[in-house]
Image (cartoon, rainbow, N blue to C red; front, top):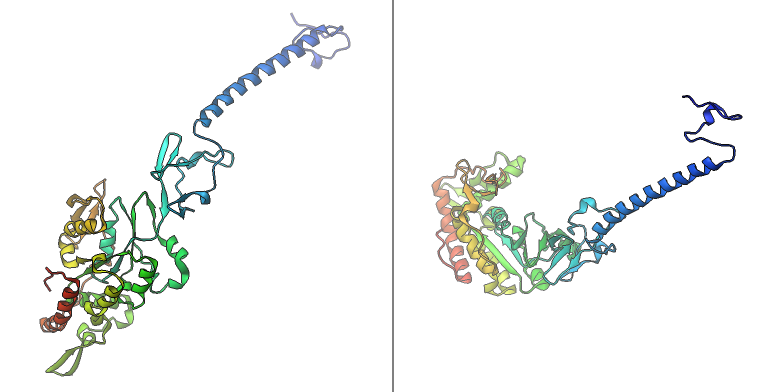
Length: 373
């Protein structure tokens, strides 16, 4: 049966409820509508209060800014680790609690504190003896934070200040030891004093290798970088020729001079005690890196961690690469191990004879042996 409009009411004004002229049915409609709205509002409030209660279990909502966290007197900045940061926004922050063991506890997660620290050890040289590989390999140790790129702070960038230097350091966790690498340091007269002034207890790591091979390797690197001397020959730069019978080592040549290790050693012994300088046999390191790395672990007083299975020698280059957990190899850049020029044996013998006295003095000052050069 189709309901007809009430007198005075258009078809568009008809209600689903019967409407009488006295207005009683209209009041019932309003009451039911209000009741329904109230009921829905209550349900929504209940649901969101449940979400809020769950969120509040993660901690208080007032969190300090990143700059307010301070670990070992080093304030963390942009490197501060915010776990679960994907759900954080301007209206939802949760507190990170710093515990005495330098960990951050956040709800269900616990994250190691991260901060930039000044180095406690520096790889000071020697250039072309494996400083890059040494830094890379030490970087796998969980108790070490290694700055693999050179900072040149104590040599070229000293005027930038300690704040700049600190910012160059990697973020380290817990009590990890920070290490930086700049092999240029070994040759600079003012560097030992600057390092000693910052930290008298600094531990120094010096990796050395056969000075004859180091000289040739230095020439190969310089020739590769400087295209203007692409046609230069090693003999022409490393030796002086008065005649066919008077051939002498060119002491003024930069590559030769940097292989005179004893010449630059005394400036370090004047600034640091001998027991704070650890010498790595670079030639042995290239053959058996684990053996030399274990000695460094002892020198730095950290747990033995590095094992033979961390490394794999590549048949192409002959260098060791790091083996990741997925068994993929991480190798040094292709610029490492570039081809050396072919040098006649008579010139190599002259260099070996020239460096013999320097080597003997170097070993005697450091009280080390076992190097076969």
